[in-house]
Amino acid sequence: MNSKFFLTTPIYYVNDVPHIGHAYTTIAADVVARYWRQKISKENVFFLTGTDEHGQKVAQAAKEKGLSPKEFVDSVAPRFEEAWKLLNIDYDYFIRTTDPKHESVVTDLLQKIYDAGYIYPGTYNGLYCVGCEKFLTESELVDGKCPLHPNKEPVHQEEKNYFLKLKELSRKVFEKIENGEYQILPEDKKKEIVSRIKQGVEDISISRAGVSWGIPLPWDKSQTIYVWVDALINYYSATRFIKGKEGFWPANLHLVGKDILWFHTVIWQAILIAAGIPLPKTIFAHGFFTIDGAKMSKSLGNVISPQELVEKYGVDGARYLVVSAYPFGSDGDISQEKFKEEYNAHLANGIGNLVSRIAKLCENSGFEFPQEKVLKFDDLVEENIKNYHFDEALKNLFDRFISGLDYSINKEEPWKLTGENLKEFLTGSVSIIRNLSFNLRPFLPATSEKIEKQFLGPKIKSGLPLFPRL
Ligand code: MSP
Image 1 (tube, rainbow, N blue to C red):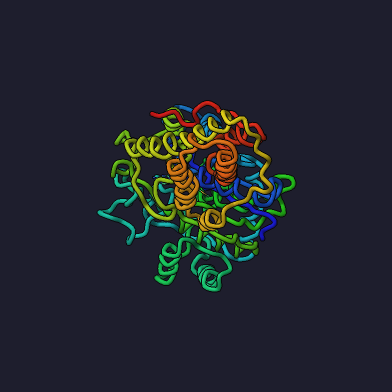
Image 2: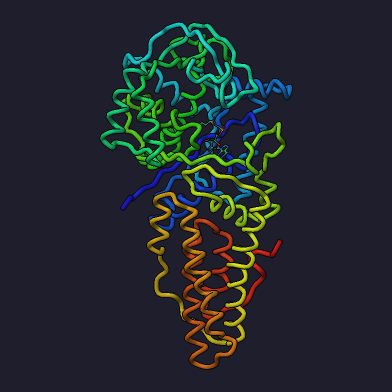
């Protein structure tokens, strides 16, 4: 078994405020972090999240607001921390790439790679997409535009840059993927990456002459470090400058959306190989959701904020709906309509109703229920969580524990039972609820806490509804 577990979310761009897309990855990471804390211990888990604050895109957003980049990032970064607090995300550290402690690790690392001969000067001539913060190759263009940002004109750039020998490094990356030194999940995403490497990889520019909002290159201060290189290094820098976290590198898990998988599985690994640093163990890419069949976008006005989710469904309602919506590694569709139906069916009428019925029966019975000997994770649920099948884990809990107990209540009709028969029925039910609550902790921490307040003592009391019907 793992003795330590270090996991990360992407660090989010501060050009925009947090939305449900950011929340999707972050909630999933929180489930994994809470699971491992329950399995090993709080001190041996390190859950890192944060914000990506340099680069052209952020500098432009600041300009539009009439603020300096620094003023702007200082005003937006706390919005992410607030959103995560609101969603009960229990991260251990919030990293910001404008923190001088991060900047200094980045600078040292780049110098090391330069000294090792993996960086050389050259001229870049081509198209750049500010939305992606990356150079576009001819083959990526669709009608002359970036496929992810068809409304933004790619900009032509020609400038002196420094290049990373990605072509050479990608051969090592390929070997390490093939011999399992690090894992790319799900399997179909790994295949995509492998085939793209086989098609051939070019060296990439890792510095910018025309972007001042970034970390200066240590050996040529007229250039700043490419924002993606700066950002990827956050995962490592956190384990260098935060006291007591040194032993957490290499990371066990980088959770990312499929949009940024290439950066994480190829470019990041190449940087680490060039610097002689051990590679992370697993990179998991989840899918993207659409909302009512459409891509989420400001121009469509269909962006959902974490605040809106919590106002509508409560904190645990929001967490449940987002994680259970569709399989984690696939693409899916979400809608407020479906969220409302799911909330009522599974939370209000499902777990909420069940817990309140059993609590009432126990209270009325006057019986005492001795403590459970050991609470533990259900084997199937545990396997689901370890494989990042969160929707399956919840489905298992809801089908087997909740629907299962609902079924026996309807069959046994405990309100007609008395004496030992009633006691036996209730003892079994209480045990199911206590175990359910233990297994639900990573997903619905506040709900589990409420259930445990009612059910952990020998005298069980009824309480307020866990999930009021919408
Ligand atoms: N700053 C970079 C990441 C650097 S990591 C070293 C970045 N930031 S971002 O703000 O654009 O966030 C991208 C991430 O947001 C995705 O990888 C994904 O985790 C999440 N999502 C954004 N929209 C989403 C959906 N529609 N669906 C699912 N996840 C989404 O990229």
